[in-house]
Figure 1 (cartoon, rainbow, N blue to C red):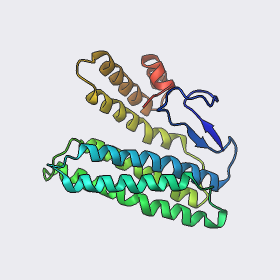
Figure 2: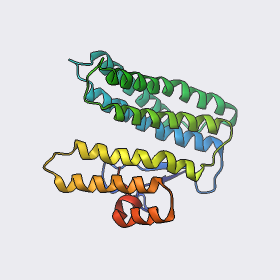
Figure 3: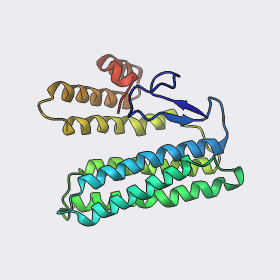
Length: 226
């Protein structure tokens, strides 16, 4: 396994808040290593999702949902620590490892779907947009599907499918940041909207659109910070 920060191969982090990836060495197709690395990454991200939602569900308007989001944050953070502190699973334990991940993560995906449905139906009010809830749900379901694939020995990604999934989510990430910024920060707002447009171009996956995306936002495309 190797530690991979955002830039290059150096182990030096850019900031105290950067979270480097822990991934198998290039060319290493050990299924257990990939399962461990993907589960470790996913549980950290999903715990953060739960923490964010707990802050966006107010005690006045959504006390039950706030309590549930806080519970998922604790459970997923604990699962992340458990995975991070133990070695990759032995081959004989791999199916159990992957199934346990799915069992712990899928309910959180279902929770986000139910909350988004309540908001759209006008049965709940919060500071979490339905689009944000859908975004987080899709990401969680992506991780669930990934661990299910690894359980059956499928490690390789399909390039077109990766672009089809992640480009729209990166577009949404950029637009979320644009709306969370102080309206007076016009320069930063504009930068995030430019990045959003670039990711929409990348989603089309043509040479012309890819070059246009890089030209419009070279740093955002080549070195995304979201």
